Structure formats: structure tokens, C-alpha cells
Image (cartoon, rainbow, N blue to C red; front, side, top):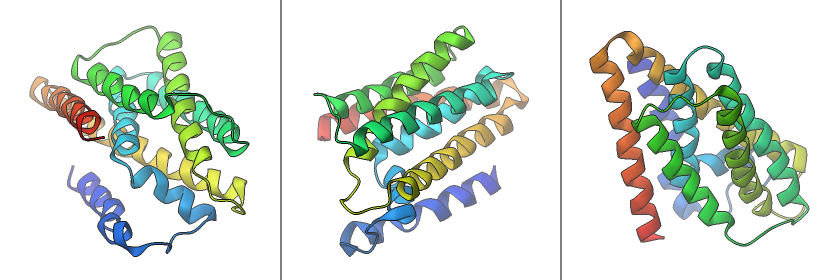
Length: 192
């Protein structure tokens, strides 16, 4: 758990500095990589995917993150060509709330249903990323950045749940984390 905490701290440490830097990360891989890390809505959802995959176990450990990443890649492509629809941000916030609730309640739906839900949520997050890509940015490089950061956040969630799978008390902590993430999602909606 200490290693996961260290990795998370290292990933999140630059965020306060970037909030005031203005223009340091302007495009390509770095901008794509920072996008999921610079918004609590994306950060919470992506860690929740990993936590849910880890608690579901078995094939879900691969299927859940893969479905989310696949949907995200498709959404990023749609966003890059400026396809949009109303309420993208509301959908992103809803994904945080639903995913964190699924972790908190330890829901284990059929694998195909869960993968479909995750692909849809990934599509929404990817669409948001693609729409915010700056003009002149290399789309493939930007996409590789946000997909890499997302995979790392999934890994943090998976690693955390794997460490916690060793007993009832530890599993309860993962569920508590899901509940706290749901509360954070509600706070984000209220503040946003």
C-alpha cells in the first residue's frame, strides 16, 4: 500500500503548480497525460474503474479497464473532430457517482453488462478529452498521453484493491473508499 501511495503522490504532486503556471503544458503527449490528472472528475472515475475491477476479480481485472480505455479512445476521436452533444460534463460527473457507488456497494453485474457500462463512461471521458485538445496538437500523441495516464490510474485502483483483498476488514476499506469517492462526486456537482 505504501508503494501505491507513493506512486499516487508522485503523479499528483505537480497539479497545484500547473494550476497557476498557465501554458506550460501546451500540447501532445504531455497535455494528454496531464488532462486526466488535472480534473478530480476524471481522476476519481479512473481510480474507481480500477477499484471496481479489482474487487470484481477474475476476468474483470482485464475486461473493465480495457472496456473503459476502448470507449475512451473512441470518444477521444469523436471529440477531436468536434463531435459533441449536450451534457457531456454531466455525463462525466454521473460516471464518477455511479462508478464510486458500484465500488461502495460491491456490485458484481455480469461481465458483459459491466464492460458495456464502462465503455460508455470511457466514451464520455474520451469525448471530454478530445473536445479540449488544443488546435495544432498531434491527436495521436495527445490520445496516447491521456490513455497512458488513464491506464496508470486504473492500475492504482487495481493495486489498491489487490492489497485490500486479504480480508473482510480490508475489503470494507475499499468499499469505504468508494463511498468517499461518491461523496466527493456529489461535492463536485455542488461546487461545479
